[in-house]
Length: 120
Image (tube, rainbow, N blue to C red; front, top):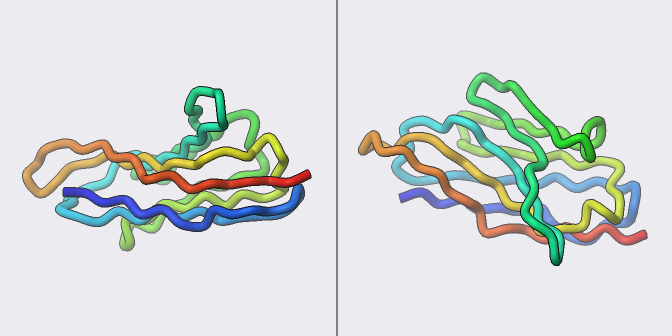
């Protein structure tokens, strides 16, 4: 009923930038909070940033001042601009989107993940 397609990952040198995108499609009436998580090998998935339907944002301390989350409601898309990347940012990044379907049922979906690798 809902499909999330992520893009924008890749390999970058320390200090570089990447922009991730996550587009939601399907029988969606409303999208509430959109978020980015990441998971490095051998670690638990951690929250990176969130943005509410009212555009309020929240960030993990480790990325504050370097990452920016944004959303385009017309395109049902959430972005993560990552600047001044560090090797410790290396992980698989997942988007998470919650909202309501045309059936009025709530939904909560995860993207397929995109690899971000930062070399030193």
